[in-house]
Image (cartoon, rainbow, N blue to C red; front, side):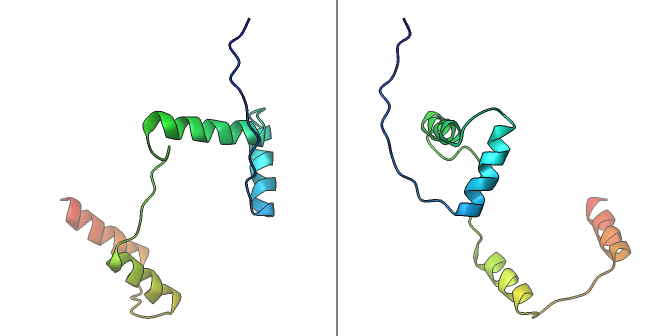
Length: 91
């Protein structure tokens, strides 16, 4: 006989649109939303952290994001100029 672990019920509040999209995604893998959440939690416990990379932006990145959102300090550059700058840095 299988060694079954005791399951408990818990409530999670989700954004409705995200929940629907996640259910559609996980249906492609033939797993339920509950199974997906259990996989996430099991992986988190196994690796003692989040099972994906999560980055917190530093002050410079936050300022750059705010500048872009507010249309400040934006310099236009062509694709050719960008490629040229990249080639110079690689060589």
